[in-house]
Length: 375
Image 1 (cartoon, rainbow, N blue to C red):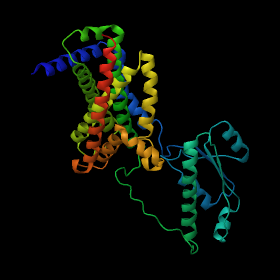
Image 2 (image 1 turned 90 degrees about the vertical axis):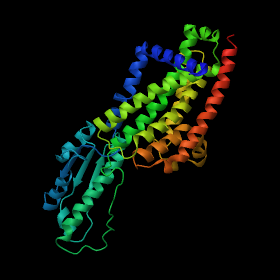
Image 3 (image 1 turned 180 degrees about the horizontal axis):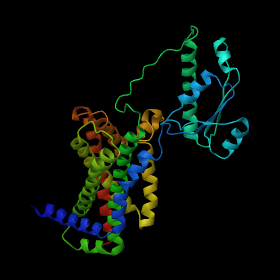
């Protein structure tokens, strides 16, 4: 082992030992790759999940009973049958997200070819379920009315029957998406936090001066922090992928885990360099935390993990091509969801490598300038 690589190795081991003596950082790593991933995947579903619904049936007909029986788990809780006086009170108390009113003579009007009107009251304080659930309820009522009417007369001008084939997530389970995306967010966040905190810790404890009097180059000091913190995050990512995402959440992994981890390692090279750069800009941990908020939010919100990039303005799409997270999200989704091979994701690998090299060079130049002021 040459002298330079030996220095990088021993300095990296020192960083690992320093991290092992920092219980709060260890708790953060464990939390980010276990509890945070599980909660993000399960706590806020994007589809309907046991929404509360009450039904005021003023018709008491066979058709209205079919409609009542059509609302079943997992999308809806069993319907509560209410009277007119109780509907407003239950909505005011927040007991029901939806209240459906079936008017009198509803079945008779349907069989007569008329178009009776049903009333749906929605508690829009639960905006996500209110928006999605209204469409679900309309579809359910229309299906039941159409099926019932076809038994007695020919129904003309029926809508086109759409056959839906959902690939890569056939059950439309939001946990399949949320778990993987939270791993990506945790990899990005912790790689920046750990490397930046390691450098600031050296400065606050005065040990950076000890390193400067040793026969070490700034590149060796920086490289040691990059590889050591990258290894920690990569190991935590691997464990979380198998134990939490695939094990606890039951998300099937379609592609090569080794290929995904190779992309994650390349992504860590870029984001750990970014953490060094931010740490050289900040004079203390509170300042570093504020800078972190300004950087992490755009990286997570605009990289395609939360909102599809196609839905963003063109200038945002172009701007975010310079962020490593954009390409990492793309390759992670292609590999883990669709089973893509290297022949498909090599452009993302190349982009991350180029961005990482640029970030490392910029961070190294800034790091040399910063430690030059200490000597």
